Length: 105
Image 1 (spheres, rainbow, N blue to C red):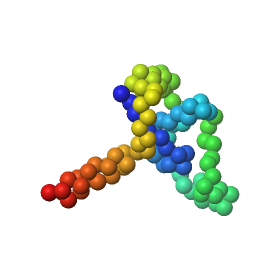
Image 2 (cartoon, rainbow, N blue to C red):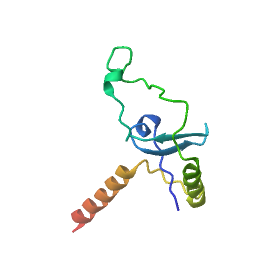
Image 3 (spheres, one colour):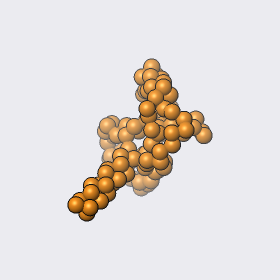
Image 4 (cartoon, rainbow, N blue to C red):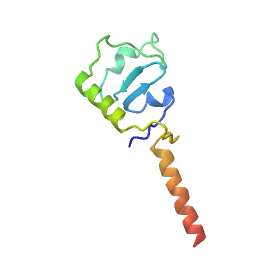
């Protein structure tokens, strides 16, 4: 069963993965592997917080995208709502449980 992990927009843009917003029905794929020559954007015309459209075309394999969406749909169980934001939250909870166990001993 898949537990949907939720991220604010500013976090998902720095975290590789495939994200879907059910309200807007927009799928975002974050890929941090491409290398773009930074000298192209070194002048003052571009600010660090702006995004630059590289192409109108999507470099995605549509069949693979559809497989990922279908896999999520098959494993997601509506009504099971765990508000885990990311793996770091899970690690923190495990650490707290370990500390409580040590304190009890």
